[in-house]
Image (tube, rainbow, N blue to C red):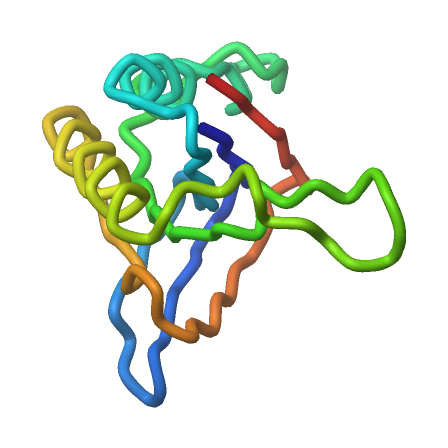
Length: 144
Protein backbone atom coordinates (compact mmCIF):
# COMPACT_ATOMS: atom_id res chain seq x y z
CA UNK A 1 0.00 0.00 0.00
CA UNK A 2 1.38 3.35 -1.05
CA UNK A 3 0.52 6.83 0.09
CA UNK A 4 1.65 10.15 -1.30
CA UNK A 5 0.91 12.74 1.39
CA UNK A 6 0.96 16.48 0.97
CA UNK A 7 0.61 19.00 3.76
CA UNK A 8 -2.08 21.39 2.59
CA UNK A 9 -3.76 24.55 3.75
CA UNK A 10 -6.77 23.47 1.67
CA UNK A 11 -7.69 20.83 -0.91
CA UNK A 12 -10.74 19.68 -2.82
CA UNK A 13 -11.84 16.98 -5.24
CA UNK A 14 -14.39 17.47 -7.99
CA UNK A 15 -16.18 14.90 -10.10
CA UNK A 16 -17.70 16.65 -13.09
CA UNK A 17 -18.98 19.90 -11.57
CA UNK A 18 -19.62 18.51 -8.09
CA UNK A 19 -17.28 18.99 -5.12
CA UNK A 20 -17.20 15.52 -3.54
CA UNK A 21 -14.52 16.17 -0.90
CA UNK A 22 -12.99 19.29 0.61
CA UNK A 23 -10.73 20.04 3.58
CA UNK A 24 -9.01 22.92 5.27
CA UNK A 25 -5.58 22.55 6.88
CA UNK A 26 -4.36 18.97 6.99
CA UNK A 27 -3.20 16.25 4.62
CA UNK A 28 -4.10 15.23 1.11
CA UNK A 29 -3.42 11.52 0.69
CA UNK A 30 -3.22 9.85 -2.70
CA UNK A 31 -3.72 6.16 -1.89
CA UNK A 32 -2.48 3.33 -4.09
CA UNK A 33 -3.34 -0.29 -3.40
CA UNK A 34 -1.19 -3.16 -4.64
CA UNK A 35 -2.04 -6.83 -5.18
CA UNK A 36 -0.07 -7.94 -2.13
CA UNK A 37 -1.89 -5.55 0.24
CA UNK A 38 -4.07 -6.71 3.12
CA UNK A 39 -5.49 -5.47 6.40
CA UNK A 40 -1.96 -5.35 7.84
CA UNK A 41 -0.91 -2.78 5.23
CA UNK A 42 -4.04 -0.70 5.88
CA UNK A 43 -3.19 -0.47 9.57
CA UNK A 44 0.50 0.19 8.97
CA UNK A 45 -0.04 2.97 6.44
CA UNK A 46 -2.84 4.54 8.47
CA UNK A 47 -0.56 4.68 11.50
CA UNK A 48 2.09 6.43 9.42
CA UNK A 49 -0.35 8.92 7.87
CA UNK A 50 -1.87 9.88 11.22
CA UNK A 51 1.41 10.06 13.12
CA UNK A 52 3.99 11.19 10.56
CA UNK A 53 5.57 14.39 11.85
CA UNK A 54 5.32 16.98 9.10
CA UNK A 55 3.65 19.96 10.78
CA UNK A 56 5.65 22.73 12.40
CA UNK A 57 5.98 23.12 16.15
CA UNK A 58 6.52 26.46 17.92
CA UNK A 59 10.08 26.54 16.50
CA UNK A 60 8.79 25.66 13.02
CA UNK A 61 10.43 22.22 13.15
CA UNK A 62 8.43 19.35 11.66
CA UNK A 63 7.66 17.67 14.97
CA UNK A 64 3.85 17.48 14.95
CA UNK A 65 1.52 14.97 13.33
CA UNK A 66 -1.93 15.29 11.83
CA UNK A 67 -3.33 14.05 15.15
CA UNK A 68 -1.27 16.61 17.09
CA UNK A 69 -2.59 19.56 15.07
CA UNK A 70 -6.17 18.33 14.69
CA UNK A 71 -5.93 18.52 10.88
CA UNK A 72 -8.28 17.04 8.33
CA UNK A 73 -7.57 14.24 5.84
CA UNK A 74 -8.62 14.07 2.20
CA UNK A 75 -8.17 10.56 0.77
CA UNK A 76 -8.07 10.13 -3.01
CA UNK A 77 -7.68 6.72 -4.65
CA UNK A 78 -4.86 6.66 -7.20
CA UNK A 79 -3.98 3.34 -8.79
CA UNK A 80 -1.19 4.96 -10.81
CA UNK A 81 0.95 5.03 -7.65
CA UNK A 82 1.34 1.26 -8.05
CA UNK A 83 2.88 1.69 -11.50
CA UNK A 84 6.21 0.13 -12.40
CA UNK A 85 8.14 2.81 -14.28
CA UNK A 86 11.57 1.16 -14.36
CA UNK A 87 11.49 0.07 -18.00
CA UNK A 88 10.56 1.94 -21.13
CA UNK A 89 8.31 4.93 -21.50
CA UNK A 90 4.98 3.42 -20.54
CA UNK A 91 3.99 2.40 -17.03
CA UNK A 92 3.04 -1.15 -16.16
CA UNK A 93 0.20 -1.61 -13.69
CA UNK A 94 0.72 -5.34 -13.11
CA UNK A 95 1.31 -4.80 -9.38
CA UNK A 96 -1.88 -2.75 -8.86
CA UNK A 97 -4.72 -4.48 -7.05
CA UNK A 98 -7.85 -5.43 -8.96
CA UNK A 99 -10.47 -2.66 -8.69
CA UNK A 100 -12.81 -4.60 -6.37
CA UNK A 101 -9.96 -5.53 -4.02
CA UNK A 102 -8.53 -2.02 -4.06
CA UNK A 103 -11.93 -0.48 -3.36
CA UNK A 104 -12.55 -2.63 -0.30
CA UNK A 105 -9.11 -1.80 1.20
CA UNK A 106 -9.56 1.88 0.30
CA UNK A 107 -12.95 1.94 2.05
CA UNK A 108 -11.51 0.16 5.08
CA UNK A 109 -8.67 2.70 5.24
CA UNK A 110 -11.18 5.58 5.12
CA UNK A 111 -13.44 4.02 7.79
CA UNK A 112 -10.52 3.46 10.16
CA UNK A 113 -9.09 6.94 9.56
CA UNK A 114 -12.49 8.47 10.34
CA UNK A 115 -12.25 7.02 13.85
CA UNK A 116 -9.37 9.46 14.54
CA UNK A 117 -9.72 12.51 12.27
CA UNK A 118 -12.17 14.31 10.01
CA UNK A 119 -12.00 12.54 6.65
CA UNK A 120 -13.23 13.54 3.23
CA UNK A 121 -12.77 11.46 0.07
CA UNK A 122 -12.77 11.53 -3.65
CA UNK A 123 -14.91 9.04 -5.55
CA UNK A 124 -13.24 5.68 -6.11
CA UNK A 125 -12.64 4.96 -9.80
CA UNK A 126 -13.98 8.29 -11.02
CA UNK A 127 -12.24 10.84 -13.22
CA UNK A 128 -11.43 13.38 -10.52
CA UNK A 129 -10.04 16.90 -10.56
CA UNK A 130 -7.94 17.57 -7.46
CA UNK A 131 -6.95 21.06 -6.42
CA UNK A 132 -4.76 21.91 -3.48
CA UNK A 133 -2.58 24.48 -1.85
CA UNK A 134 0.54 22.58 -0.82
CA UNK A 135 1.80 24.12 2.42
CA UNK A 136 5.57 24.29 2.34
CA UNK A 137 5.64 22.55 -0.09
CA UNK A 138 5.77 19.39 1.98
CA UNK A 139 5.27 16.06 0.20
CA UNK A 140 6.27 12.54 1.28
CA UNK A 141 5.92 9.09 -0.28
CA UNK A 142 4.96 6.49 2.33
CA UNK A 143 4.70 2.74 1.97
CA UNK A 144 3.40 -0.04 4.16
